[in-house]
Image (tube, rainbow, N blue to C red; front, side, top):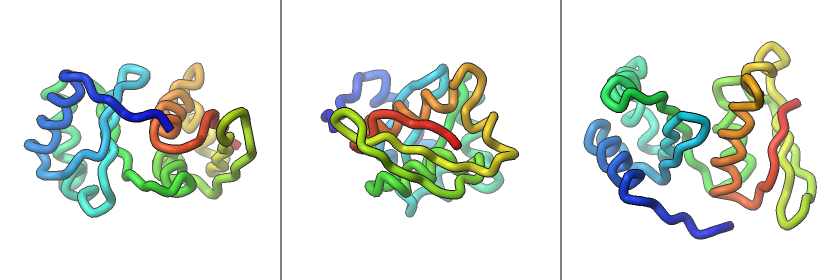
Length: 141
């Protein structure tokens, strides 16, 4: 896995998020016009706020779509967490290049949304997983 370096803009987003929510941020990245925050499980409720109120407030403040993902050092768990909104059922790994390919099986009703228009959700998932695991590619089944 590559070492993660954060630019000043990303550090500013992390600081703002932590001050607004009281939650610790494990990582922050931008993918497909969304700002993604990876949050340790102990701080997840704090980060979202009751009924998602804190995330909504931050979206308004930043004028940007925000995604909060529960961080896990376990690649299987992280893949499930990335696809959490689409009701993931299981993850399967296969060797690929210098890493692994992951296939995440979701509830068939949610499959199109899990992939997203022009693969947008898949690109976001890949950006997160490549950054934190040995996963090099992602697909949805």
